[in-house]
Image (cartoon, rainbow, N blue to C red):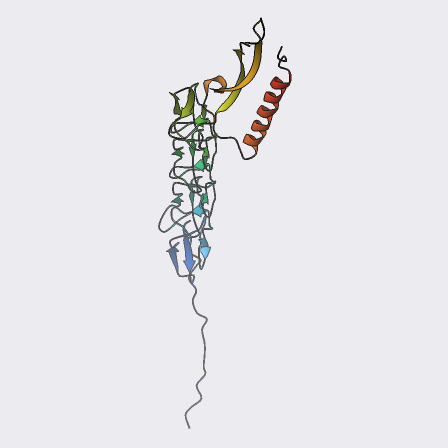
Length: 268
């Protein structure tokens, strides 16, 4: 039988608490360890450093002592060393975890903290890095997401802020046009080329003298004849009237003719 042996245990010796600097943490009460990427400590912490939140960054790869807000025009998704700049066509405020796309009618450059309104005569889709000039035959005001076609009788060049009315002697019967067409004189009527412009026919009374052979005097008979001439309002060729308009005009002209006939003096 073995002799009795008294077992004794001594407590484990502990190192005195370490005086670790900011940007580190105390590991197992034995060493000071630098904060890893995306973490920080304003003063030495036990066992681990703090995570840097989204919208903030540490600015250094390790040993960070602070976590600082991202500036406008940049963002971070969390535990970031550096913030990421917003791409053109988007923007962000400070402390952002993501960038926001610009709306239609606005644009932004790289690393922008805001989007800017498109000028008159330009337009943009969403997420635009710049505004696009309106094409000929269209126009726009400020902040436009699309350009608008010019109406009939108007035209525009590229980058127009408004459409211009056709000058006297010209016309345009199509929308979205960049020029007006000249009216040309053909025979006794006006027509437009290449499309025929609307013509307004007016009937004017003409005097015919009829000599009778069985009386001693000459009888003067005033008759209204259908002598047609074409007149263009203010010398403009105008586009065709909408459906129904031409019928109304013909009815008005017929009434006008009947009134002239009914009021003509009777034959002697």
